[in-house]
Image (cartoon, rainbow, N blue to C red; front, side):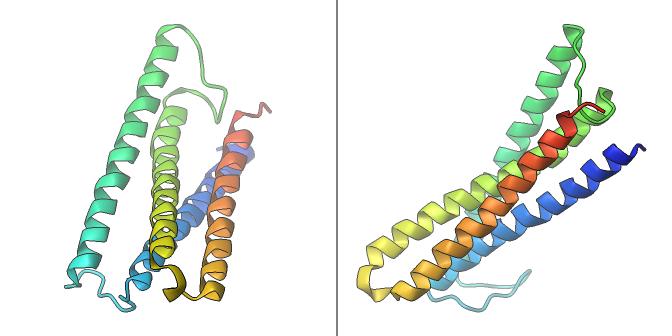
Length: 164
């Protein structure tokens, strides 16, 4: 494994963790806004929490699967035309990396943004009942986490496409 490939793999893991953290944070904020501050992972939770998590799982895996199929289809199409992928060492490893890593990171980011929009709508509907300081801190934190994940993803893609 080349040094550049190792760097891309490690940076990919970091961007994955940032995206997962940003996504999980958004779901936590949504449930806390509705008054559910304690949950049991793998246990029984209030119907609101179960519905939130269930709908998010469907969204996440639908986006991830759709993107993975799209990446693999694009890879197959480009191979049929005689093109090669310039990142990593090319070939199937590049397609597998993009399908798995890219699909999961994009699904986390998309679901995180979707959650942020729902949170903003819920805050707007609650109006003065929501503390303005809390709202400002939440929105700044959300922007920071989601931006960090998006930037990390963009850096991985750029590093992957860059020729040695």
